[in-house]
Image (cartoon, rainbow, N blue to C red; front, side, top):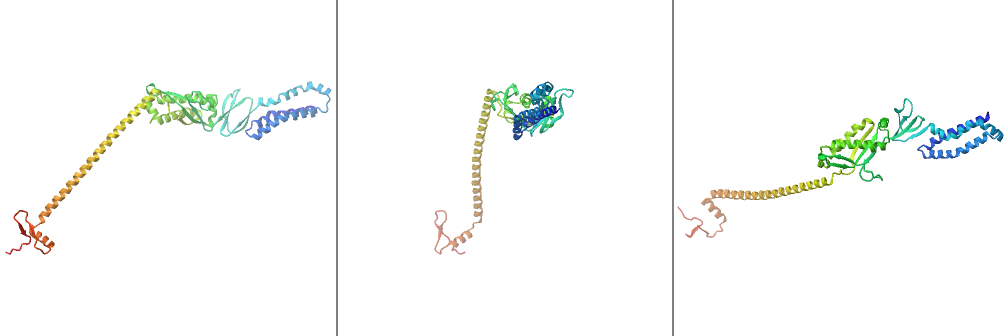
Length: 360
């Protein structure tokens, strides 16, 4: 009886070590715990051998052989113990910024249960469950034509503008999984985040560009209406995938959109012609401005001359009206130096005495 108890203790130790403790430690995100789990996995067989030796130390070989048949089921259990725990239980460590979607594999509750979306922590799942880890923090995906991080697949977006002109664009998106709706995301697409973004979100993004760019002129898409197009695409995607558990935060162009080369050449020629026309118009305006300036200066000078002449004429009239013989004599007397002064009378009749000395 003691032998049975000793063997049972050995089995319990082996089961607890390899079925629970070692998986829990080695699956931890803590480095020290992982190292401890690895050391335990290596040292546990030594402990099991010592326990078996302790169980049979008082029994001879003959009794050991006799007991082998009876202990065969227990020996088989010890043989499969290292993997038994992993077959029955599945350990998951959920870090911050992630959730674990628990899926029931069998029975009437097969599928995803909304209550089984679990936040950060450590969980043991039964044989009837499987866990899928979803990142809930902001993620960025780009669909480009060029190679990025070794990925050389052409994932760029094609859509058509007015007159059937095809435009190619490198598009990026920032999004996050709504934690409470991670189960809905998995139930809808049954895939990983990479599969969801590379297949489903890309297709929806292309559909949105095709829908909103239809009827728009290429020059508008490349110019002033580009922001309006991006805003419409972003709103469309938010409305479509938001209820399904994906929050679209931003949709943007990684690089300028690429219309056909002949369209680019036509746009460049049109822009150049517009620039030349604007330049000519500016030159005409400049010439007109200069002419108006010269005209204004001449008109100003003429007005000034006219005003000076008018003022002089008016002054002369006033001066003439104010002069009289008595005033002239008075003014002359003020400047008289006492000599006999005479002045020319204005004709050739001779000189007239400046001071009238005649008596009446």
